[in-house]
Every structure is written in structure tokens, then in C-alpha cells.
Length: 556
Picture 1: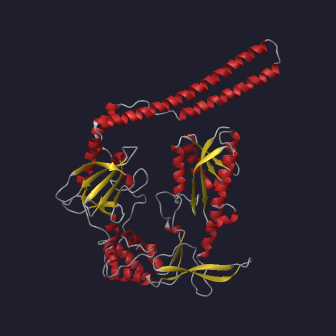
Picture 2 (picture 1 turned 120 degrees about the vertical axis):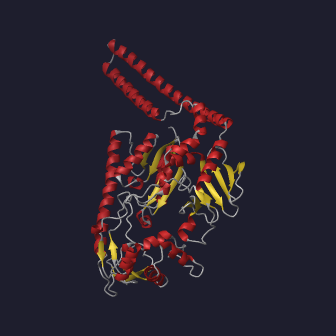
Picture 3 (picture 1 turned 180 degrees about the horizontal axis):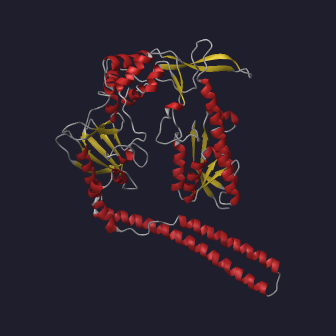
């Protein structure tokens, strides 16, 4: 039997699943056994712990990595999971992901109940498995939500405060667990309450009452005040205070939480581009926990902040006119500061000042959090375009084209040989059918020969399916036009001048993998995608008076 190659994925949404026999080691053990019994070689294994497959807002990093790996590696033809619910619990999303994999010749196999998705029976089993996974999660979700809705209004018999539904307490509070009896199994019944955090409750009151209401400080001024050497206050997670943290604190519902209100059913985890549900759907309970500020102070602070309305769908970073912000094609930060490892961000000043790039840590955590080195946006972007054009000389382009052409020729030759083998097998089967038909015409055993003819026809049908599937992997590039490629490189500055923001950012990321700013040396290092063998580096000096380009350096 021919060896097949596979990737294997395991997942648990709760560590307690280990007690039910579906721990990650147990899942991998079952998949390895199935692979050994079926002559399958697992090339990569990956697992996500504590990740739900029912919530679309949960990012499964290892799952996404395996999906991408399976599509890129031509050897891989199987995506192994322990059971259907490990892959995805949303039928619509599961269908899309499986379709993408099948376009690359990869099929999902649940090893606990394997089926062949290329057959009619297998498709039925797959559909039933997907429906079962989604409906089970839906039923569990509805049951839990109904319990949580009532739970938030139940008051503790000793303290008088309302119970919480788990999760992290907001800034100013901390979770405490209290025992309230014993259940029928003899285990203690634990309930969660909020109490003011001794360290952060006074800070929260100072931010709202002293800084915002009395001094009318801006959010940025509050950040710099809290991060100043005299204060040196860290967030409850131990990180420096940033503007987004203060923005979140001055949301209306957050302020009312600090005034003793409890909220539930606020966030919309199903609809994309929409964070919160309509306020009419929220469940609100007054005097649910100790108040740090009064309700009047909460409403006054919100009024001072203003009622600026944000778009329900924020502008996508992909359309940003700042070419070097955001991620690269590998999902990594594209332009970073080496001093603090933060992302470089846009910095806009009013009047006659030019737009600049500056470390985003300064933007969100205030002065003193990093080196305040500013790089003129227009100058940097034009210099990087020059480097791209210099890097791709006519000789470099011809060498690159020759490499790609050789790879395309090899791939095309392999494809043509595979098609030729299938065509020959079809031709041989048809010849054999003709011979059998002539034998039947002579009056020999008709039933015996009809059975053989039908079998050959089934073989031909299967070969035709293989040929159709092979056509999906046919090389899409057959010839490279070197003249057009040179024109493309030489016209980059025009494309970047007249193209959309999305196109301009895409062009940059086609050539460059990452950029790093060293604020102490006033230098930017560029890491290129161009050479598939080794990563090349180019440096740009950003001295205020001396701006020159270095040559292409050695590999890393």
C-alpha cells in the first residue's frame, strides 16, 4: 500500500476534558495508532489548548498554521483529527475550510470514526458529523446562557452582593470565591464575588474624580501622569498604562460598573464588525457589588468625555496610507522598534509638520516609555522604493526568472507524466473492453464477460475522476514574460503613486519581510523576501543631517 502523508491536530476547550479521555495526549495517541494501521505518516502535529471551536472570535493559532501547512505541502493529503468536533463546531465554517483543503487534495479524517469524504456515504457521514457538533455546542451554549442570565441577579445570603459568572474582574476590583454549602456529590459549592482591589480601587477613583472631573485631563495626559516616575503605576496585569486602557475605563458601562452596576449579555460574539449588542438586550443589575465611585460621578465623567460616535465597522488596516504599519504576509509585525520591541506607528502633527513614523509605545504609554525618534513618512517610503528598484537589476531579474522557469518546467513535466500514465491506463481499459465485447459476440459466457466489462468501466470512471482531481493541481504559471516583469519593477514608483492604499501596502510586503528601527544607532534594517536561500539585509541611516544608503549586506 502506498504511504500517505498527513498532519494531525488536537484541541481541548477546557483542561478538565482530560478527565473525559479526550486530553491532547489521548487524541494524538489515537491518531498515531490509526496512522500506523493505515500506512499513513504524520509529518506535523499541533494542538490548541483552552480554545473553543464554536466561537468565531477565538483565534486558534496552531489550527490556522496546520491548515496553511497542509495546503502548501504537496505531499500532504490527509488532515487527521480525533473526532469531527475537534476540527470546527460551526458547520458553515467547517464546509469552507474543508473545501479549501480539498482544492489542494487534502481530506479531513476523524480517526475515531473514519469515513471517505470522496464517496456518497462518506459525504452523508461528514454532514451528519458536522451537524451534530454544531447542535451539541448550540444546546450547551443556550443552557449555559440561560443559567448565567439568572445567576447574575442572585444575591449572596451573607454579603448581599450579586454572584458573578466568571471571567476577569475589571480594573478596580478583584475576584473572590466563597463557599456556600456542599453539593450532592460532597464537593464544595463555590461562588464568585467582586470586592474593591486595595491597590487599584483608589487609583480608579483618582482617575475618574481627580483627573477627569476636577482637572479635566485628556486621556493622553492621564496616561503620562500615571506612567510618570513619581507615580509609576502599572495596570492590573503589570503592564504600563496605555491610552486604549483609559479609553476602555471611560466607557459608559465600565464607569457604571465602578458605581456598583452589573452587566451581562453585552458583547456580540457572533456578528463580525460588531462588538456590542443593542443596549435593550443587556441585563443590568443595580447595587450588585461595592461601589468605588457614585452613579452621579460616573455619569458626569462620561459626559465630560463626550459622546463621540465610532463607526460600527472600524477602517481596515489593510487600507491604511501608512505603508509600513501592521503585519507582513507571515502575520508578524512589519516595522518594529528594537529598543522596546513595540510596533512603529503613525505620528501626525498639525500645521506645516510632515507625517512621521514613531514608536507606537510612545503613542499609547506616553513620554519616557521609549526613545522619541521620528522618521519622515514621505522620505522613508521613497527611500525604500529606491532600494527595491536597486535590488532588482536586470541581471537579478533574469536570474530570478530562470530559477522560477526551471521550477515551473519541473512541475509541469511531473504533471504531464502523471496525466500520460492515467491516459494510458484508460486506453488499456478501453482496449480490454473492446476485446471482451468481441468475446461476447462469439457466444461465450455472457454473464462472466459482462461482469468483467462493468468492472473495467468502473475503473475507467475512477481514472477519469483522478484525472479531474489532478487538473486542480495543474501548474498555473507556464511561462514568465521577462519584459513585463522588468516593466513591473521599473514602474513600481508609478504604481505606488496611483494605486490604492491596499495595493501599495501589498507591493511593499511582496519584497520586504520585516523592518527594524534601532533608535540608538539611528538606523533601519530591512529584511528581504527576495532570495529564497538566505535572507539579505539592507540598512538605512536616519541621522538628521546624513541620510545615505548602505549596500546589500550578508545573510542572517
